[in-house]
Image 1 (cartoon, rainbow, N blue to C red):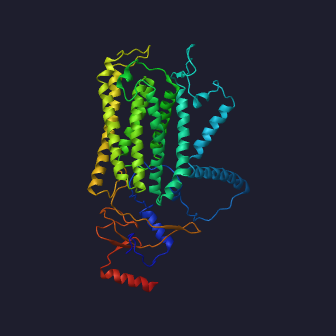
Image 2: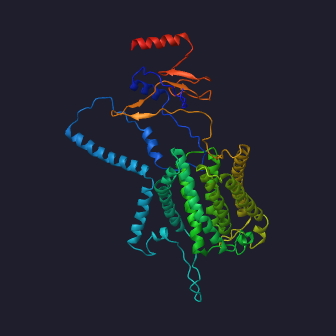
Image 3: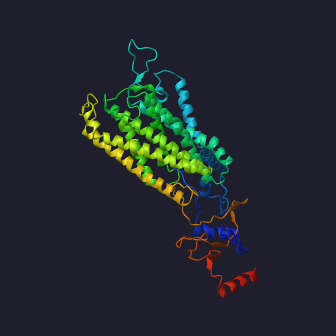
Length: 490
């Protein structure tokens, strides 16, 4: 018996009969992923293949009915329209960066028709609400910006733009790197692509955020600066651009999560909760002027995510330094996501009410009061709870790594870690659209007691031979007699 658990057997029934039996009893066969997991499987060329397996390629069995020329013409036009949309859909799924690129080009083209602040699309491309500089200001004085509804247009456009850059970089640049690194399976390539893009993004925005913080009153997580001078209604252009671009990134990630464009993981519920909390924190902090606190939370998560993504990349390429680097990542994660964020949580019950005014005044936009205090604490505490859950998984990986002397480091946040063996029959398309499957007889080697066999029959705790969808006991005399009868009939 081969390593795949499939034992070749003489063909007893025609191919088309076997296909119908399997399609009724089992449907499509799911392939189990066993490589170490990631934060989420990204979109890519696999989307086209998945849709292709769901589509029915079998030609119609009923004969063609002749129609009148007029009806034939109308149906021909409809068919052309349907064909166009089908081709567009297939192209869009194969090149997922195409539609976001076209939307961005359309918006930029419409803006270039009237490239001035009077153009409504100006708010989508550039920051809105600039404040005039003082009369005696020097040329080096930065421009400050206020806040308003037009900022939503800025976030929306760059959400589309980041969708384009994400998909384009993954499919055109990162995927060839994964192939050159020797990753043959699409599952492993997808994980590599996702983490490579994540490391690239946070490798840019992590240092960018530190630079923005160095120009603010909260340099190196100074909690006093988060509340002193409240409300913080205006910011430098670079601060506002950083904050809104981060909002666009997390909005794009939330869209991916909502549309289920990534493979669900074990911690899918925690991941959904994390995104909901993150979006709520971003909006509330921007609307109610707690942006300095939001800047600190941004940076702690960005830098730790960079180390998380790079540790996974080193694991995928089997780098010899993956062990020491992983433990360095654990220290960075613990310090940034827990020590510093817990300091911010503590400041909500110490400095929040003692530094600056502590009242609710809608006219002066003074929102630092007991209501915002408890809401902010609840959101940050919920975020901390999710991070603690992931910290537990991170430490469990480290424990297993040390216990196995560095043999394997796997991401506990993936759902594809089972030890069950799943078989997948190779399919080969033939000209008439029927799928040929060979071999037709398999020996089931799954360890799961209640798992369905490939041909649709119920599995048994012991290896089971299945002939044409019917289980056969190889040791029984009836099975040998039946096999001889089949050979005689042929």
